[in-house]
Length: 244
Ligand SMILES: [Zn+2]
Image (cartoon, rainbow, N blue to C red):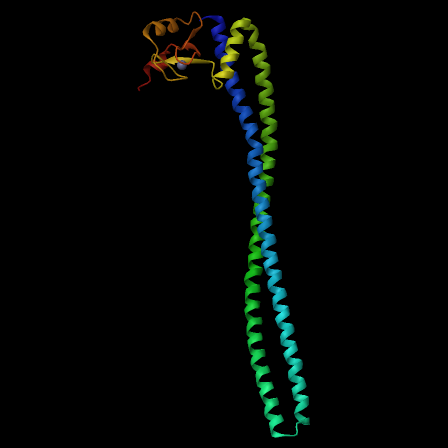
């Protein structure tokens, strides 16, 4: 095999690994942002649940105050009872007291309703606290995992770059420039193996004359469709005996 072709194949493997490692690193912020957004929405939901609970408590306190107001009025009626002189005054007072009783019953019913609402809303606050705790835990776990993975990936990238640096002297400058321009312009694939007479990068079949050239691995041949460099991997004995 042409020496520079062998180096380009190695470079492609290194560059593909570099791209994969860099892509994983680049995905970290988006994953963390998504998790942070879940924490933010759980925080907002908890605040809303607390506000609903507080509103309900405040409403109940107002009604309880109204009940106390009715009680005060009723106590005054009781005091007036002794001072009543006429039958008419007695009936009027009795009517007032009956009205007060009814009003108090309605208010107490409302207090009961609000107390039950309060229980439901308190449970909702508790549930929202649980959701927030889970979201916070998930975010912390993602951040810890990323911190660990980031160190591993950065070390991996440094090793890949160093290896790449040691390989590039094996290719002449114009060839390396061509490889790098293809790498940039062809979605990270500059050189691809020919398999079954086709380019594995673009999946186009190659003309028999081109296939014959590529099979020689003695020069840099390009795919006529995608312009990538091509090489041929002869079947090994193991491949040949593998049933397909
Ligand atoms: Zn191609």
